[in-house]
Length: 103
Image (cartoon, rainbow, N blue to C red):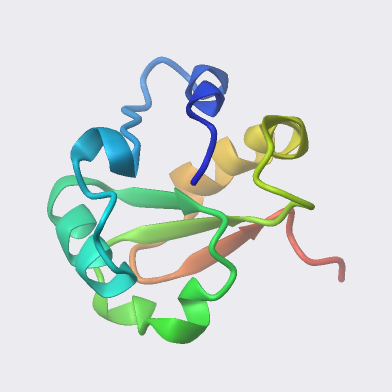
């Protein structure tokens, strides 16, 4: 459910495919994660429930969770620099929240 226009904010060396473009729009979270781990290194999402609903440690897939006021481009775009760093540093089977929680 992320705006497709966010793709242009990612570096050109990052392959970006939306769930809908992949033909996975009707898949539930568990099935989606199983499919994604076979083809991709990471999943970028705003689904705050995903880490609580799925055992992410069993997937060979890093998850980057964008935390914003909405799924609107205007709310998500400012997070993309931090998301790029998280995409390259998040280990498979773990989730990184962007922005990071204050310490």
